[in-house]
Length: 275
Ligand SMILES: Nc1ncnc2c1ncn2[C@@H]1O[C@H](COP(=O)(O)OP(=O)(O)OP(=O)(O)O)[C@@H](O)[C@H]1O
Ligand SMILES: [Mg+2]
Image (tube, rainbow, N blue to C red; front, side):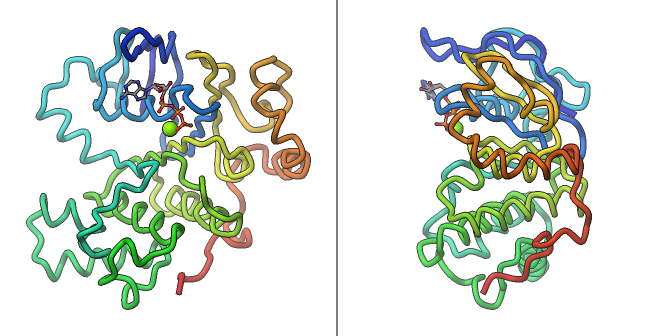
């Protein structure tokens, strides 16, 4: 669905991406790994056209984005949704208004229809609508805010793809696991093409089908989880090193599923509503 071909990108004199080529498979979760400052968020901003590459090609559904005008970007961005690294919720709006933001602005639905859709989306992200719809973001826990941000991305005019920037960073392990379950649930329920940018390797191995490791502006690894763990290349080993204990615990599971989807009855995948 999304292709990068030899993409170069700099910020001032700093080279961020130095010839990056990869594909994002439709209906799968592609994980982008890499140390801080390596350009993971930048990849997402480039896909959304918020920044432009210096050279190279980015394709969305076979269309080169290079020649897109405002109208094409607007249409494309309606099909793609982003969960930002810092959630980017509007503090002065309620949870319901945040989730329905795009619908209130862009759709022809009545307020009642929008509220119905917002409530349905809250059920998907397992936030009790009756309890949370009128709250303000500052009355929520970090994990609940993350769910609202994901709900807003889902409600965004039925996107075909969602990009999650560090969805589990800063969350306790239990909440991180449930956010990971939610990402897999959206992929499986809606066939959502997903990109998860993270440096949380344990969470990544649970949710990802395909893995890309960025290092020094280049792709140091592109493949499945088993290949990542077996890879002996220095940048890959260097990145994985601090996580080796976690990985030893996860490796048998990764081998067992071979980077494929967990079975539907996998524990936790359909966790209960947050109360
Ligand atoms: N607006 C900007 N102006 C100049 N440089 C920037 C800007 N935004 C990011 N950068 C630089 O681009 C590089 C890549 O940033 P990016 O945010 O993509 O990294 P990241 O891999 O997402 O890091 P993190 O894991 O910390 O979120 C960094 O070195 C950063 O300093
Ligand atoms: Mg980032």
